[in-house]
Image: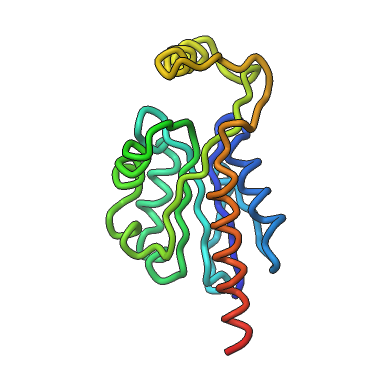
Length: 173
């Protein structure tokens, strides 16, 4: 099974997470940044799509990609992964329902939330202001340096394990 990992990344967190997943898989994958031209050829029968949510929505280019490629994605094995900061399981579930189109969400073999890596030096003034408010509301200290403390490593492990097991079943049949 040929797999492509497609990601949208504004500051590098989702890119880093996509590469982490790709490195842990026990089969070859192609990494593709949504900013670059992407061909969803018949060569790829599995797509892992990662994108962050900002204010409960995908960025425009991620939403446009999913909309313009929906028919093709519905013909492939699909994994949807949301990245970002979210502290409530209930809000994570709501966000996963809201950001991915219903047809893709229902078709996906797995929909998951992976958390985030924070790069404070890459944030603009308004992004820092918003994150500081979020951290304040959660009674957490805003990180001054890069941190993967908000990465859901157990979710990433589950994603990788499920994909590796699926690949093993594909080869053994």
